[in-house]
Image 1 (cartoon, rainbow, N blue to C red):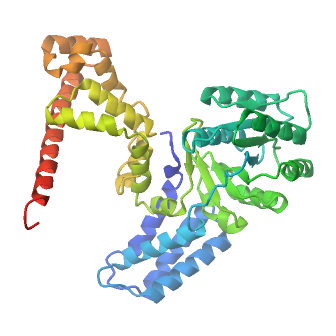
Image 2 (cartoon, one colour):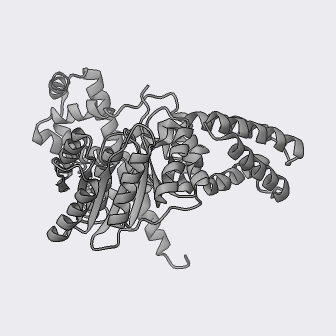
Length: 450
């Protein structure tokens, strides 16, 4: 089963921690013995997740000390208390709170650094798209890798896809000159952010460090972001330390979080380097870039979901005018297959389905062994798209003969078509009754004495 989305890179750690907390489940109080057993299991889980042993020991020592000194409130079980302490300590370990991102300037200059293959070029284009669509900026990308023509070509292709200009000079081997020319071009064209993609090598070396240090010195960037492949584990932390000693970068970007990584780098890179993780990225798709929130990551590691991120993703797709129209149609029992198809499209825009459902508290564990594919809605869509415009507008028209046609046209069985239409009708009834209950509740609130 393929894993998609950064929520699942901690799957094994999540299971191990849950096993550790079982030691305290059903216990009436916290004692030195049961806390010691729990903390020992937590430490093992962290080390297995590629967390440095010394960091894991310091972390669990703090958890142990807080657990023994806190005491247990009457309404809170020892298991709940240790989970709360773990949540707070994990949040602190990963930086405490989300970090600011400085894009003030005329133009603001962002320098991207990292090893070859870390995902710098892909991140550069994701960041440009993020700044354009979320921050309403007018970015320019600069292709500063003078050694790999393929990297320049890649950035230009990616720039076309998101309609963001790219400055490149394939004839030049001077990264400083290219960066300065790119900034001049941005000023002339009215671009308010310049993102400079730089060259990397397979390992840290002096020539690369001198080169990017020179680019930093001449461009005076607002932000220097170090991009690291999270799948390299503790090597990512060591590379970050080497880059930070030379560049004193402002923040870290963790890429490839959809791979089979154990998560140790994400947990400890801020603690080790003293710089915040600012963005996390998974996959190749342009919209798979997220601001890093330590508290939310801690919540997900502990299997508690991430309802805040789920709601934010939903709000990004929310159209108030369309929502009012749908509400009116539901009240008149006029919700049809076109409306249903529109709702499916909004859900798909939010991202990978399994990752989305994993944000809902309690769902991550329930879905652990369930394979929810990106094309989960394809059968339903095929049935709807096989309908005539009139059938989509008026579901009641679809009789037995039409259902046979829909089954053939969509590549489904007649049983699957019948099941979908039945589910659609039941959903309509439920939406109608929920709307009535909501209206009744609003009326009750307006009654005297309430």
